[in-house]
Image (cartoon, rainbow, N blue to C red; front, top):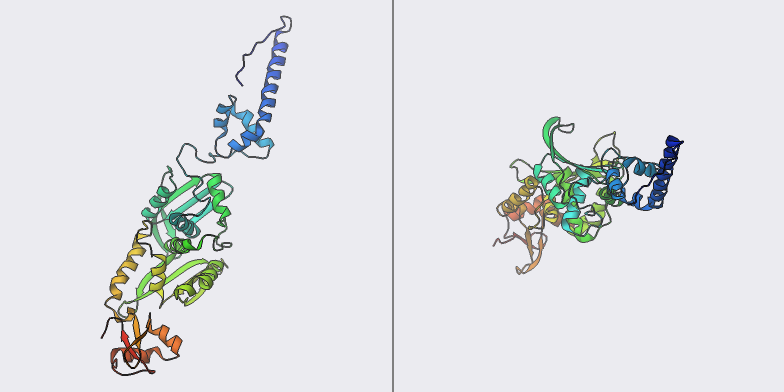
Length: 360
């Protein structure tokens, strides 16, 4: 649009002539912009109206007219915060461990605002927000605020990062994350090798694990998500890893599709599955450390040790993970088996000898 402007005035009607020339020039500019409207609309997804106006050497109102005529409303903020760094195609395809993990975390503690094209991630752990920011290459600010948790009736310090970008947001929506994810959220269509990372992110964001029992030597954990995700995990993943879901229930009456699943005897096996990658650096420290401590505890506490089954000649037949696993398979009381393991290991029970692993 670089052109020189020559204005010839009618001396007798100087103002009317000038008005006509200016009007004609504006019309020419507008017609030229209309010809470029497809390019302008495309640019509007990644640039502000002011930036587009600079590119085409015009003013912002002209750009605004074209976008409004096409039903594209002007947003209060830039669509992609273009002055800040961001990998806008980070979630275009889940093809890495960290992408699967952060997708799971967003499904738990993230929020999608389709109207403003914003993705918000909230956590009381600063390491989480910093890790997410690093992964997506964001130059956005992390805000700190006090939040009241209705579930625990406590106030805690929370950290938040907001990403305002239509492309970035739409990639997550395409993966099934919506603004009403508490009502509609299914297990994402991702490669099976990323399942454990997705569930780890989901668990780190909206799960809990603790020691229970008289001697605090039993693990118990729970995970809050939608019924569809719980059903998918229980049907397609747990059987492959010998994990039993104890039970699940609806969390509140107001949110009909928000459920909590509980795992007791197989809690360690669940943690072993989701935290299997020792080189992965984004696991939530305070939960991952419970798993690491549990590994050491299992070496000394008999309850955690595997059980070996021998024939009458003390030839190894099979190694079992828990007493309950044996009881369920052989249809015998777990308490009786426990007695033999601890008091009568030299006697035969159900035609077999039983020993804890590495025990003579």
